Amino acid sequence: MGNSKSGALSKEILEELQLNTKFTEQELSTWYQSFLKECPSGRITRQEFQTIYSKFFPEADPKAYAQHVFRSFDANSDGTLDFKEYVIALHMTSVGKTNQKLEWAFSLYDVDGNGTISKNEVLEIVSAIFKMISPEDAKCLPEDENTPEKRAEKIWGFFGKKDDDKLTEKDFIEGTLANKEILRLIQFEPQKVKEKLKEKKP
Ligand SMILES: [Ca+2]
Ligand SMILES: [Ca+2]
Image 1 (cartoon, rainbow, N blue to C red):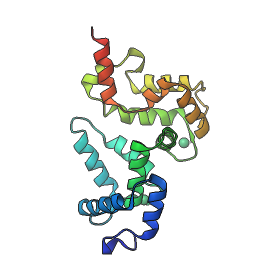
Image 2: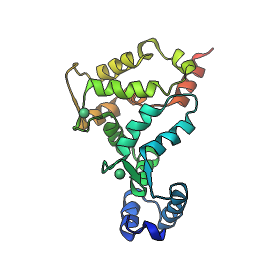
Image 3: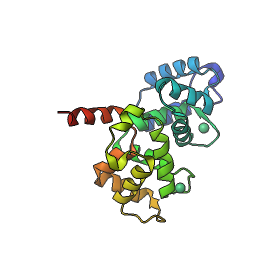
């Protein structure tokens, strides 16, 4: 962040971001200026990140989920998000290819970062997701996925794993690509829940 004082992105970071995200230099520079306005230090702390999430989900409790997302975005694990981590994260989770999204999802679910996912880690993330589902939406979930435990069980079952087994990144990505149900269950998509409910109503 040597150049942050001058308000310009370093050439190095610019080039890296252009290469990784296909955003133009102009887009990135404009984006960086507004990032600095919101965040004059050039870094987003865990607490600030949580506050942003709370604004988006005023009626839910997104703290736990925000913590996990923050961890998965903080590539160098220094406890803050700099502009580079921020742009790459947004790119990965919004416009990135399916494979990039799944790589990100893997790092989200690999809570302890040891390179594999355990059933407990699935339960931990699913529990965080459940805290973001409004009670009303939760009521309309199918019987076999309406608690974090049941949902984690269902996901684990789809992967064909025993309780003590672990998922590698390869298992995770291949399994998810092969089964749309897994993809649905590992995500937080309240809008889709709503759409599904509409379909079910006569
Ligand atoms: Ca960081
Ligand atoms: Ca793990």
